Image (cartoon, rainbow, N blue to C red; front, side, top):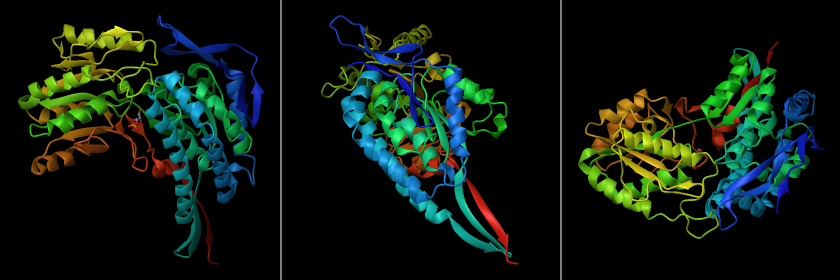
Length: 490
Ligand code: G3H
């Protein structure tokens, strides 16, 4: 059944929306002849509603004693517990929307929901511990201090389409938990799945703590940033949007940034790598959710001595993957949620082929519905677009190397620095490499593909890949400041 979202959450009220709406489509066809499916519509809001949400967040932040930022830890935790309890009742509905809106497979959609619930529950536990450890009296040189962690202020949260529930909440939940007040705009794809949660947000938290608006980023996020009244920009997405929003803030040097941005995580395959394991990890790393993950492996460096064997077996495995609708049993490749993505991937293929790369797999580049079969390209060179751009989709560039300095130099020059996967057996060769790699990225995965989880591990990156750190432990710190009251022993 269609979901026509006709209200938005501001200052604790689900305000009816009577203005223009934007239709939301799935790229999954529900008819035999391919056609996108209408799922519903969302309000197409503008400056007035955006600034109304900002005012509500400011008011909630400054309401004084007993309001959200000053509320007792125990009470804030109770609100969050009520929210997560209500959220759990919406599992089936949200999982279904994840499948239709972004084409995520059933097991992965269920995992996204469950992982988010775990994230919230772990955040609650971590917050209790953080409060116990950080809220204490100290005395140094005759000065007493009561030090604790407090909120930063008003947070604008914008999440991505590939994890519209999990990653958006990985920003929103710790921000709320620490006593900040928030404005949240759902991602373009994966927006309707917020509808089942509106009432839970409204009834679990005091008014103005969570304000939810709909519309295009430029129409609603920009006016908010331009006021200069936002204290934290929390965004997972691309650096172009993050930079544009940051620059709109008139006092951007005051703005705290919590950002998860692009990455071009490489796999480096050494000559003694276990090929069975490496191929399996590279398939998962490059093509889980069609490569639409910031943590996906987006370029494979393979040593020349094993390139032929690796390429042959890898390409064969890519063609043996199962494509289907998200709810079908055992599907590994699913429809792409962005209507423009297949054409973009095709451009990358054409560019690479024109510059000398070959498509190694028979099905590579085949087009049907809103899909393009993953193309395995070899040999990829630095002049090709797929070598430089974050493809965020089903295309796999493979680069041969003879000297390990080649991939290391590329990584040193890259604008990104999230993770790397290193495949090999000889510990004496691996050890010095690991030491070098951890200073180029933030996580080195040994004989395994890149990933964000487990969510207690720090999730961040160097250079243009991230600002601040997200994870159950770190996000609470990213959304807080250490404050204290001091007095002298007179
Ligand atoms: O899109 C980026 C996500 O953080 C990837 O998370 O490694 O759990 O799929 P994941």
